[in-house]
Image (cartoon, one colour):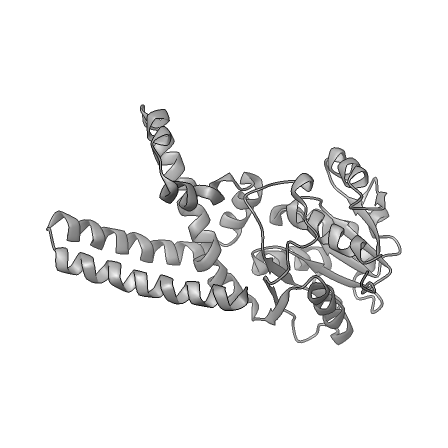
Length: 294
């Protein structure tokens, strides 16, 4: 058992990510208190041995915690921040989140506190699954995955260090980014792919012969559309909260599709081959990066 980064932590929200954070912390010997708006999640957390205490309120879960991890959908964070306001700017408490849109998280904090608390370390684990809920929680979910932190100039160094140590103790690779750059990068690498997967499945399933289409679907559709099984509430919040960067890359993608359509319509086979070849080379390079990480 690894020595815990802290002796007592609070995890607010017990979905896949929150549950996995709680499981990893408790595996180290940390006492984990948790709150979830759905009491069945905290009940399951107790039954599965993922948490030590199922709190009745957010503030009860946070009481006495040296580390607070907010793992609720982005548009629900403001309410959580209001409930833990007494913990803001406390140097002995580190607070972090797992949200995929850092700008919106910080906006919610400013609405509650008027500023970004010095002990808040914005975070985003680049890990997950199409599986949802506490039942899919995995203490090893973050191993060999990227975690991006976006600390600000006023963030306590001790708070940042504690959050870095937590993620590293889970086996994650931790890096830092500016808030705006994070949201632009994630719009391109995560938010757009999820939107495309949802939109494709919605398009195919709205046809009268949709059942037959899925009967004959091969691995390509299965692999591409896997992430359309992700939590709709979470992804609604992400897509609407990061609409600016998302719409920018979506417009570029739609322009690319229009060009591809024109190439096919005009039977420009040479141009089509060039496009496919460029994409293959880029994807092969991406695959080599992934192999080096594993």
